[in-house]
Length: 102
Image (cartoon, rainbow, N blue to C red; front, side, top):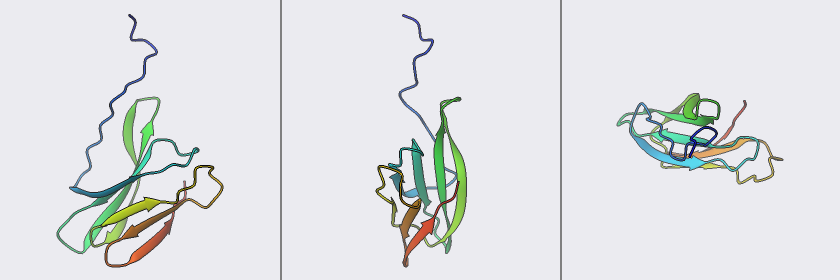
């Protein structure tokens, strides 16, 4: 049986810090996209947007932004048709809604 043309079924990604929250995006135009929130025991934490590079079959960091305090919850807008603005909600000390571009 040839392995040529067969896709990888298990993917790995190692975040640069302890992951405290995560959520998959369901937008059809942003396949295999994941938001990860850090847990660093100080005020300055991060949210990282990770996506699958289908050519290399590896998850890569697409964007990182600062977040005050660890994110206790992350959630993408539940937009299965891709018609609404690309939004990501995070919670920590407050509920924040971020508009994601690119």
